[in-house]
Length: 113
Length: 114
Image 1 (tube, rainbow over the protein chains, first blue to last red):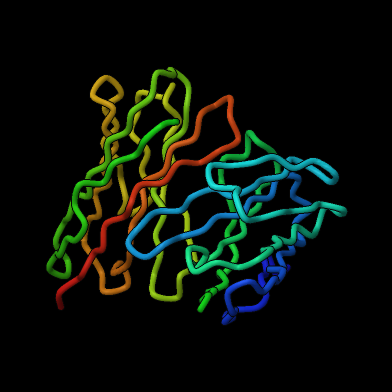
Image 2: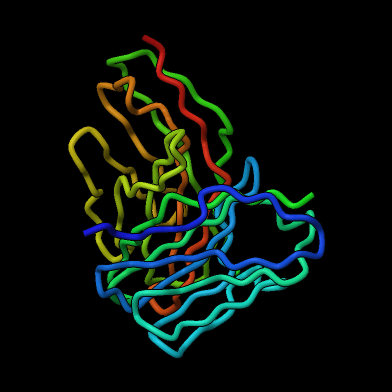
């Protein structure tokens, strides 16, 4: 049981490039989340999903897109990367909305230059 | 949106001593959950303790306990018998019982002095 996995661990992007951050969980969790953590700050929710085929915006969705075609995977797409998207990105999952505990992945550090 | 405030950017504690980290939050709701997460240098977020707002009894997990003051909207974390492995960033978080979003504070960096 690997829990929540994220790839890559670190990536450098040039301004205007695109990339997909991968997230997968093997716990059969319905709920999945993407957060970003800026230096010295807490986590801000970007997008979340309550099940396959269902996604919704969080606090800071601009510049990102997500999809949820399977229960296991929840990729985050960055289109036209900007320096403001330099951050550490965390994926998390939970079994249900009532299952308050979120299990976090190890994070992806993204640097946009 | 709800706000979570951690007013102590940095704290330090002597090994084996006790330290309290502060957290306040702002909400108009009556039913919600509160959490403390630990983030060590590995950046992995680890749940330390959680509290349901409808429960009057303060949550306890081994050396970690909370002081939940609902009327004051305060949720402090007490770490007893501090250990070197407790050194990390600690984040307070809020989630409504009705919503899907978590709201995090800006964190408190805890240093444990040998």
